[in-house]
View 1 (cartoon, helix red, strand yellow):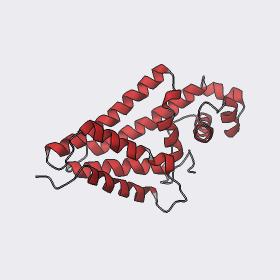
View 2: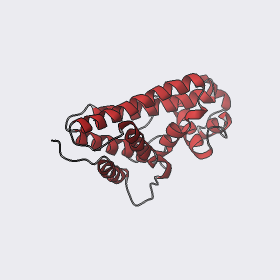
View 3: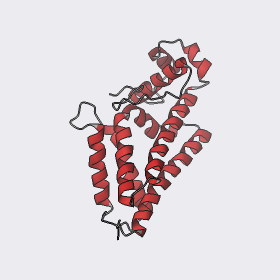
Length: 209
């Protein structure tokens, strides 16, 4: 399992969370939620993993759900940044789709513990926080859909159903967090390259007209 504090790519996760005590609690929550599930995890479990008392947790987070929301918000902001950077980048649609899939898959593999919580605990959020995260997911969806639509218009892709293909591409990438194993035979970079090739084949990528 990767550390929730640092992925296999060396990226220091949660650096935006301060002070240090709040960051330690958030890292502990990610590890506990990934291991036991949100509903089976108690605030005592989280505080214990962070080496703190349960009372210390409430200084930084009012509820367990607030912790999950913070984790989910940061993770979805990162996902959107990855996809928007690729969608707005230079090059033909195939190049941008390749970059989007490589980066998105690499992040989900290198940070698979965090990504599992971010992607699969959505229904544990309260209604207001859930709506906020769903809105971010729609923006991520729109970034990929934009690349696919550009490719269709340019004659690079053969995609009769752009919304459906967008869902398939994102689902394929996100699922990496569920099965990736750091002791497996592929690195996050290698999985990213494999999935980029698979997705380009899926959309029938060919040189622009």
